[in-house]
Image (cartoon, rainbow, N blue to C red; front, side, top):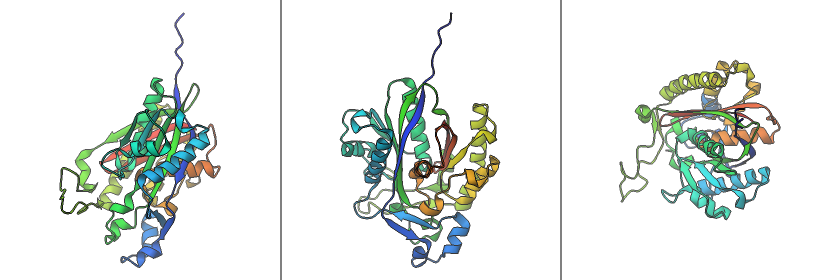
Length: 329
């Protein structure tokens, strides 16, 4: 008789999130640049965003979200055996934000590393962590998406400064024999980098006498919108086909919160009413890697998402990068 091989899933055991104390509304921004609440909201769906203040960093926000996720999962720092941290705004070039947060959590010895895929960072980090759990090598994995993107926006550029906010979300993954993450799908196209990028790095454009010169988000908004909608359309089809599912099988869409029009376009592709789409862009703005886990935790804490439901997480970001995670919560 052939041996029956049991499948291992990575299941989300707990979620958590963190937001800076300071809230900046569209009316607040209208005092700094030529814009208005109506102009911003009608084009993006954003009404306000949280902005990191003194002492609030990518790592401290990630730590707060991580502690909440661990509490929800009922695990201690000592049980964490892997940390994967999605961010494009690390506290330092090195050590990684994962290592810095690991120390703050009082964890020592387990592997910890960052993943930079811009706004797709959490999706990429979750996909990587899923593989480690499935391998059987790790049994309690902390996955974080955290950003302080407002520290690299040009506050004089009304086309970008109105879009971004700061925040963090986290999940704890544990192995499960019955259900959890069903599939992950990741893509990238570096040839489109100049449509959404930061043109300064350590070995390109860096001036020691002006270490922060040119560190800002540069974006061709209309082009990014078109590429995002097309890429996410294909991603939806790919994810459903890989799992033999119909679009109506999805209980909740939890998308990257960049622009309400992009979210609505993806929902339309799924023939999904907006009542089954988690939307936080109005309250948080675009928090890059923090976006999807923040929305996921909001959905869990509000009681909208229930155990056993089928969730589609997806994101699109600079690189270009894009990806999805289909999971049974």
